[in-house]
Amino acid sequence: MADVSGIRKFADAADYTRNFIVREEIGKYLPGGRHFIDEELINRCISEAESKTIDPVRIREIIAKSESTCETLEPQEVAALMQVSDPGLFEEMRAAADRIKHKVYDNRIVMFAPLYMSNMCVNGCRYCGFREGNREQRRRVLTMDELKEEIDVVAGRIGHKRLIAVYGEHPSTSTEYIAETIETCYSRKVKAPLSGAEVGIRRVNVNAAPLPIADLKVLRSVGIGTFQVFQETYNRKLYEEMHPAWSVKGNYDWRTTCFHRCLEAGVDDVGLGVLYGLCDWRFELLATVLHARDLERWFNIGPHTLSFPRLEPASGTRVPEESPWLIDDDTFARILVIARLSVPYTGMIVTARESPESRNRVIDHGMTQLDCSSNIAIKGYSDFENEAHQEKERQQFMLCDNRSIDEMVRYLADRGIITSFCTAGYRCGRTGGCIMDALKTGREGKFCKINAVLTFREWLDDFASPETRAVGEKLIDRELAGIKDWLPKFYPSVLKQYEATCRGERDLFF
Image 1 (tube, rainbow, N blue to C red):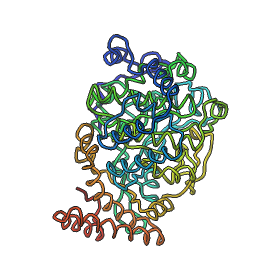
Image 2: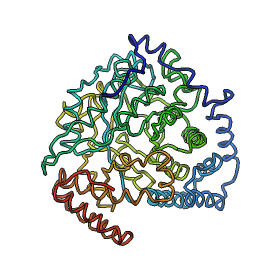
Image 3: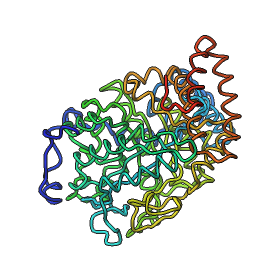
Image 4: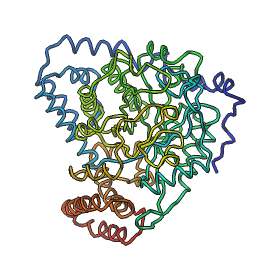
């Protein structure tokens, strides 16, 4: 069990709301009181880019810089890309984004499942179904026995190896609770339906509220993967309108410095995201780039992932329908391309909030991760026979893409994309600063390709329908031939591990 003796306890929700923030852990990363989200700079970049005629030569220079260096772009360069409207020039950007994705991550898409642990929350976010005071929500916190039932479905019936565990902000889902759920997820093992092999969760990423350094160290000790916190909006005025001042989340500086504390605590994979549709997307994307650059400045480590959630309908609120900044599918696709060019090394997550048509469209826009067979109702996996079933009163928002994992794996394989269930890099220490250079040079993609093949073989044997298995095996044959071509001396070792996987051994990796 995790040692939680050093973390603070709270009597109730009111005590938590008043006293949770550790104010002395904020100022260190805002020297002189100046915030790294420089709104004046962002607005100036947008205004200056709007005032200039688009120069295709300059745009191509920016594209070339992104592709050759894999370094985060300057905000002025990002703003220039945002102004491109010519379809031909944008297609050059999209093609470059796809090439960068293949350079860094090869032809893999990483698969994961969201698992919501609770919908209890002390905050009053105006757009969120979980907000305190929303009487339409049916509140619940998973017990450890209930969590085991969820894992039995997610890992044992669907076949996921990687979770994003999601928590509301509330003393009932304290750091002690988060640590216990992580340990429970890792310890639960079940039998795969087709092969009978022992399977389970190998990687637990967390989406939770910002935490103090002491709490983050506890989560590190139990093997947390990426720590994900979505800023929702970087526009301070709008942030204050959406998040009441009395709430913990109402403290803008506490939230924006969260990842600095993570990296200081040794939680070195962090995931940024904003809620597109709350504010001007150009402002939000430029602010995201400034956030990434500041993490690089302090720690030489940027975000492991960027996420791109859009506002979706939720219980007890009209904000998702009435916001003046909602974006269409064309704009969403533009955001992904510009993000890939702007932060070339990062993973990019597009979730089942998106429609099937939208996700299909952006597969070649630089994305690297997606979820499938998702259910975000509290205890939704084990309560509902059909993962596509949704209940607005038990979840934070509504999902749009209800395709099964089998269907998505087959769709990707038909397009020459291998689904990766690999978690090896995290257990081999290829995280944080260690992985940054490997990502930028493309070395990490080669390791991950090999491990993707092994885990894909596992999933086909353990869970796939006959139709998906047939398509998947053709793809594996091509992938093994490719590995033999570019790693001929290492190929016998790869083949040995692959053949052992075919015989039923599990969790082999390089």
